[in-house]
Image: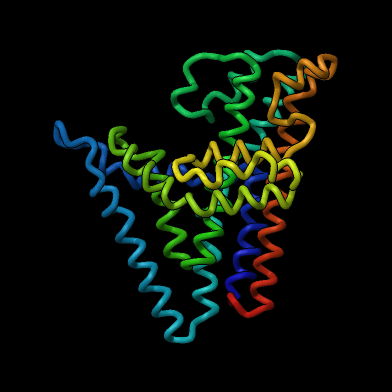
Length: 296
């Protein structure tokens, strides 16, 4: 049953993302508004955020246990479905990337940066950069968001259930939206620890879903680097698994200058297709595990 609930929630969430609906970021920000003030010198404390997310996590654990103990499996599955739809998703990215690719096609890099700058990390929003650097930043951010909003949630839901999936998503939200910037560093460390194994599983999946030979030659190196961050692991894996210099804009421009105006759209399509194929691999593997009886 959990596999089918997960599959249904994934399909629903993708449909909502395509329609740019049900963005939950504002809900997370409002939930953390209690931590907007902190005593001077204690802005880096993380325990208030931990309390805010631990309480609903324990409540979800208790609710799931009670429903399953009472054999209310259908109701428990409904709770899982609704929460997964809320926990997953990255609405707005499809439209932003389409506008970005169109601006790139026109050669208007200022417009491309303007449309995508709010989605970039805070350190990269201030000024426009060279097209090559901008595109790599956008590509990295897009892959990280898709990983955190889909693959990471799915992984921990399969491993630990809906309460663990909620906890993981809450930690990501704390890192992004906690009012005290100093505390976000600690939440970021926790988020990287939770992503350490899943991002390496996705890196390997990139090899299976893309150019396995290229991935074996270059992409797997970051997997064995314990300190490699999720963005680095994803960029290395995707760059080696993709063909056509999809993540090598400078090289593409030198080899195919006449096609440079199409590069932004082509690269985005290649990355999106790689992520979709990787999700298909995950779904197929989960289906095989269900058939083999390893998961329900």
